Image (cartoon, rainbow, N blue to C red; front, top):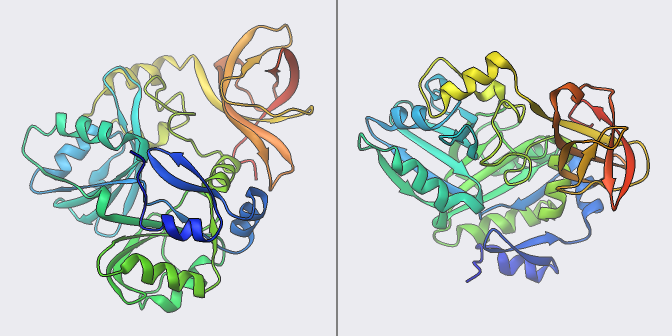
Length: 358
C-alpha cells in the first residue's frame, strides 16, 4: 500500500503532479521542473523528503558499529557534525549511501538513508550489531524538509534564535524552530544551492505549523523532478542509478569517503582496487550533438565499441543542454575525450567533462 507523508494533502491541494516514489505518494512537480529548478538556483524552495529513512544508534558500542559498516571515518565527528558516507557490501559494492549525524560523540548518532533502502539498510546494519548497540528506526515519525537555495537561510533566520546563516557545511544545530522544539537544522542538501534540511517529529501539529510558516515566507514548493535535475547539474550520485550493489566507491568517484585508517566491510577489496586501479570510472559528459542521454543507454567509442553505459542523463534547465553521468573504461575516462551515446541506434557525439556541470 502506498504511503503518504504528513504533507501529501498539502501537495495535492497545491495542484502538484503526484506519483509513486519509493512506496510514497510524492510530488513530482507543481509549476514545472524548469521553473522550480530556477527558483532553487536563484532564491529558495522547499522539498518534502519525509520519505527518507532515519535510524538512531545509541550506546557504548554505537560508534564501533558505525565504523564497521561505513567507509568514512565517523570517529572524526564531534557534536553537531555530519558526514557523507556509504555502506559497503561484502563484494565491494554499495548497499546504500547515507549521512551520519553526531548527536552526542561516542554515544548517539542518527543515520539518514535512502527511502527505497530503509528495510534493506536496517537489516544490513542490524546484521553487524554484535556488541549490542541500541538501534531505533524513527523513519515513520520523522518529517524532513529540505529548504534549498541561496536565500534559504536568510528567509528562515527569523524562525530560529541560533545563527543558521553562518552554519558551516555539514554541521547542524538543534533548537526551537517556528515554535516547534527539538528541530534539527542541518547545513546539508542535495542541490548544491545552499540552504538547510530540517528534521522534526510530527507531534502536536508540528508539520502543519512549520509548513504554514514556510508558505508565509513565500518559499516555493519544489517537486522531485527538479530535485533530480538540480543534483545531476552538480554531478551528485543517485543510489540505484549511479551507485548500487555492483559499483564500488572508488569506481563511483567516492574514494574521498573511503578511509583505510579503520576496519570495515570490503576494506581489503577497496585497498586492492586503490593499488591496482579500477577498470571503469563514473564520469560526467555533455552532449555535443543534439540528443538526450537516458539511463542504461550504451556509451561507445568512435568505432562503435561499447565502453560503458549511461547511469543518469537529462536536459538540464540551468544549462540549456543535455548532460549525464556514466561508467566508462578507465582508459576513456579522460576529460575532453569524445565519446558517443547510442540513442535509438544512432551514435550521438558527447564529451567527457568535469563535474559539477555548473
